Length: 301
Ligand SMILES: *[C@@H]1O[C@H](CO)[C@@H](O)[C@H](O)[C@H]1NC(C)=O
Image (cartoon, rainbow, N blue to C red; front, side, top):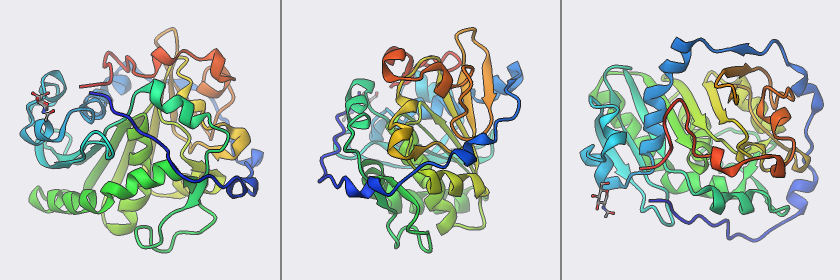
């Protein structure tokens, strides 16, 4: 069910040496407000779709994967792929209730991903100029995430275009948990460049930091609606560290110990109601919070 994912790449420390986080961009810290229960409930189908990303590609294509698939019974699968080994599973299809294309990518086991994200040698790279035409070379992301997204990018693009035309919709929602959240966040930069006339929503769970300050600013300035939900004291979302130049885009929602879901404005909001303040260091975290539950949904197939 969970798979091994290795960042087995040459390391170039110089690539991160020039990166620095701008504290100015993090000063946008308006009021932290609780979500209403209907706002929380509205995430539920997307949370199930993120969890379903862990199911194998034949199960998602047949939409026969037990509780995950049953939670969104009217979903119309269109394409799926990955092998759950070198390439994370993914699926694309249409939700007629929400009237949106759904794109979901598989995550990975927290014990697998944490050591990779805390490796001080984690390296950033520019995005591929063929997949991301016109993107600034100042925008840099973790190489492991970039490589994982590139493996499925063109297949996912073709599936999204097919689904949009089959079901006459221009809405696309990208979801994922953990590594899957990181891959989907890169899709949230990639797909709008390839399909400029669609409208895009991103909902990630337990998202690690994906890129540098310029990446976070690009995501914030884009038209994509971004939400990334962090559960309690999950340490994955505080990795890789800000000291390495990694910055989250805005859009954090933090599930607190009280069960309240807090809207945390700005990038890496330092409040103790948000993940950065609640989990200052990895050893303050609890890895068992990574898989959930997110509003009752435990991630996994
Ligand atoms: C895929 O998942 C389904 C349902 O969860 C399972 O029955 C099947 O054995 C799996 N197939 C492979 C190839 O792992």
